Length: 320
Ligand SMILES: NC(=O)c1ccc[n+]([C@@H]2O[C@H](COP(=O)([O-])OP(=O)(O)OC[C@H]3O[C@@H](n4cnc5c(N)ncnc54)[C@H](OP(=O)(O)O)[C@@H]3O)[C@@H](O)[C@H]2O)c1
Image (cartoon, rainbow, N blue to C red; front, top):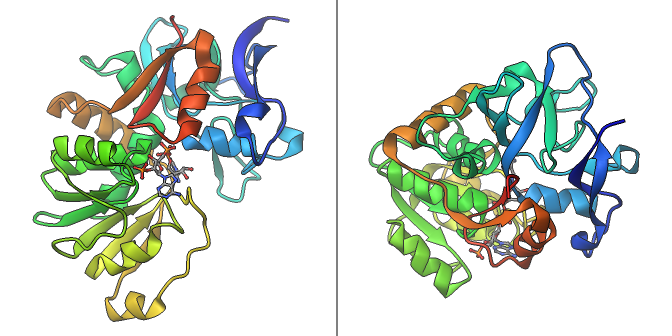
């Protein structure tokens, strides 16, 4: 049996997810069907999802060991440079789909197997390390702003917890789409970097100069009341995550009086990823990269994400 190097969850640790990470040998990825292909991974990136998996959120004991990682750019069997779309039809999952590293082995390995239809061409002008940031965090932010948030001309956006992967994507894309973007961050240094991207950066909970039309929520309990208070009449509060807790108190008077929409969202469609890749290539929008770590030091990449100090994406270079 062929083996390959991989970073995987060997067990769960709710308090110290880094302790549940193993870097070692795993079997070559299997093909559940004839239309599956193996991609040689050149670059991947980490998401908070990988830390949730190590904590045991969204994975069960029977699914271990599970190779982590949702994002990959690599080379297909015909030698084409491809971006992997990480959402797969998954009968039996209540969502009808799953993300790589949930039911099927993930991308933090030498190779990953996916259905051929999940491969998109890497656009000219985008590096493998930049494109590896897009399929999860940036796709989520793109759908939050566009399909779900329906952000229109002249409208404004608030992004909570702006240092994160999804949040920096929402700030950069919101600015590139020509919107007025406000962003909160707990860290003064991150606020400066957000301001340099063209957004107005404020402390968590601060009163904004105006009420906003779209709120990008991935933080949850720590920020949700501020999201409600900052929303203009008929605003859309789009929720893709709840890093600080998923059970916030929700002031329903504000929801009905201001006629707010609270919308859940998850990842995006292949068409939305194609649009996003083209948008980034054409408008020269590039992901905010916190750090690029060689695969030989992938455990350091996890420690960096876990520290909470990140600004943008932690990328893994599989060629180094
Ligand atoms: N539904 C989906 O399709 C989807 C896709 C991607 C991500 N997500 C979810 O979205 C969330 C963000 O993911 P990510 O990969 O962008 O995470 P990440 O890069 O790890 O985000 C880190 C950021 O979260 C903020 N944060 C963390 N704890 C906080 C707290 N207690 N209070 C306020 N802010 C806090 C920080 O912002 P500051 O330091 O700037 O304050 C930090 O920079 C995760 O929960 C993830 O599971 C969902």
